[in-house]
Length: 86
Image 1 (tube, rainbow, N blue to C red):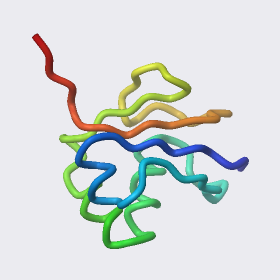
Image 2 (cartoon, rainbow, N blue to C red):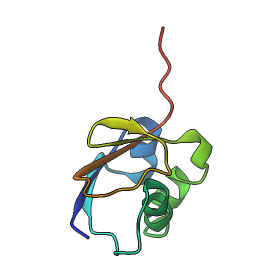
Image 3 (cartoon, one colour):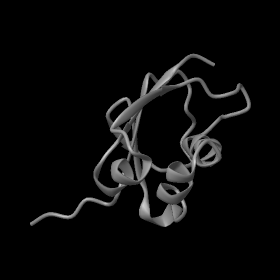
């Protein structure tokens, strides 16, 4: 699998300790949820940020998607908390 640019926002970024990183997941990673599970094993910060999947939202190549979305040939995946506004 090719490298993917991961982008993190708000408290997800704070817990991981960086706003973005390049990752090269194994070929077995098929969905955004698989990627989150794999990343959660890479550091304590990732584990803490990804602990509660119901509090996470994702975008693949800048399009909002559910976590069970296939990664395909994604170049960028963003992970962030639910957005509220008024």
